[in-house]
Image 1 (cartoon, rainbow, N blue to C red):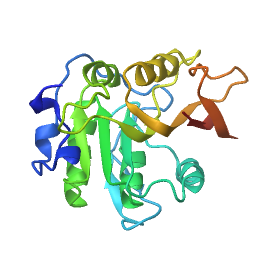
Image 2 (cartoon, rainbow, N blue to C red):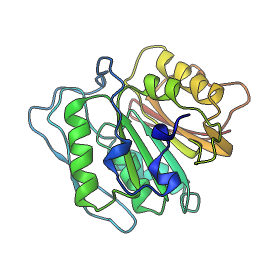
Image 3 (cartoon, rainbow, N blue to C red):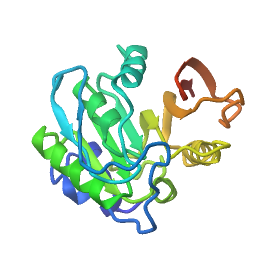
Length: 230
């Protein structure tokens, strides 16, 4: 990893937007929701920014998880966020990442490929004055995972304690399987890391590495929430 690729949240760089990289590739829109004709809002449900509202991009297929789904997740993590490093892949609205930052995570990295969504992630980050806590990367999750690894170059490695994985839904969870394998292979997870996976409700096993263990799971409507221990 070169000096320019280091995460400012790990090496003290206060420049904020220097961490914003463009990896190219086409935007993968979330397929599980209908088109949004107008931008909306999402509410932070806990922590120091409780009840603050974040703006949403008026982009087809992009929407945050409902409050009830997010509340389930963060009820599973009441004492696991303080001073932790989090990765919000397929960030969309940033609802998971901003919620984690509000509840005490020391560093949150958001990855999103949709340009409109990226623009509003930056707007919301600035409104919360979270430039030194939240880094935003413009590009696909696949490109981010291929570009970074957990090796230590002396300036701080990309390693995470908690990962939020809420990709566009597909019938066989192929994207979830590929992303989990990339996370494992690239050494991006700290020992005992947790991975939250939001997926379509199914009776089929999630395609996660065999050494990962499901510790919590809940179904609400057609959505399945799963917390995995590494």
